Length: 557
Image (tube, rainbow, N blue to C red; front, top):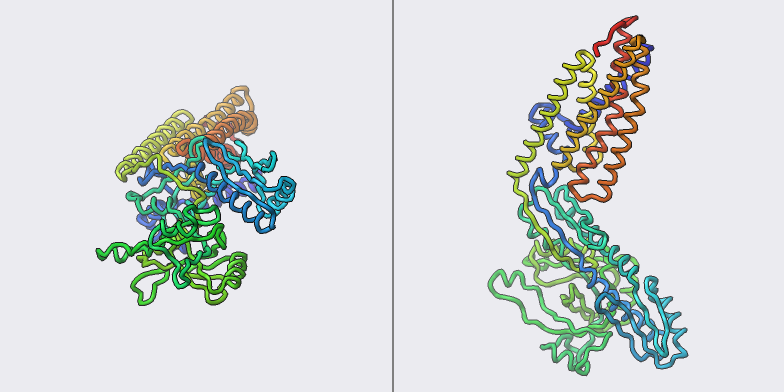
């Protein structure tokens, strides 16, 4: 073996070891002298390695997206959009109705003239879309049905969207290292949320499930042009003939009296407003929202700005509706009514006597977007910090005990060559922890079990190599030849066992839940690293031994 090759391999191992060690115990900022004291190292280690819920304590929530409500709302909105598109085209229309019941969703268009059905369907395809819906004609009607396959696809999309929105809300509110992932079967539409360190999750729960649907709508003026509201709901409905048509809604209007309620004064008087649907602009066109102090700083309001497309639509509508009323609807409640005196483009305010916290929470939910459907909590658990501390101590003790036992066995059975295996094993542990930090993985109790199993498999690799070398020595071959043949023959077996175990672990990760995933992650990382430590590092140490003596006649194995 050339000394140059040994030196190159040694430099690579040294660099990898130093980098891995720094990743595990080094700070995530510019280092200072205090970072390399014992207390500094412990602090950095705690910050670098994320602990899961079972180790750190916190809150465990399982929620379900109400996809049935999402599909019903989608059906209603599409029916309104179809009605408006056909009416705007000036085609004779009798009625458009949405029908949702027992997992069946369909839209029925009844025309006055059956000869116009083709033209109506062309208009709907151009203006509304309905790619997921299957259209059929019968007599003077067009029926759009939502198939089971489309229902599942849309429900899955809604669940993924809810998951992303929940993640963004948790990040914005400052929950450290939350775990948000799909839970249960694909058709359960459940989301698992774990928040390490959060013992009282009530405010976070409210933020996660809060609706934040913002609409800018036209307010239908009462007979008295100086007013925009009615005293009772019945009074508002009476102006519509007693029945609310599909293109109108009757909504409550009141100021959110958080400040007055805190002072014991209760809510302001509720009024009622008739608005037009669909809205001029909805929350999907929102660009940003922020909480700002109101006049005098006594209460807060929500200032919002629209995206360019929404601003263009809003500007065109307000320009064509000067001297009309506009309403800001938030979660089916009219929060503000404005009299349009001039064209408005990309910004506005929501007033309502908000406290600072409620204004900031509402602005946060508006920025993250509206949930596609309501969510319901199906499971909630709180893990106390004492349980986490006990779990950590048990896991650390088990790991140390296993490591010491393996080290003692290798040194006793293989004597001097056992040091080779011990060095490779310790490097495996350091690089495994470094990999957890680099991949931003969370260490859980099952993950610690995976690390302990990796220790066993790392030792197994060294045992395979050593036994192969021993067999070659017994046949009378030289030490150098025995080492070469031992590594060559053991390598195939090591690759075979590692690959099969990694494939099994990948199945656990893809199809398993949280604990199984933690186990699979640490096991896969440990096995991949073991190919470096047990083969490359161990071989380098043997090469170094051969270069120390010109003719090495014996090997303590």
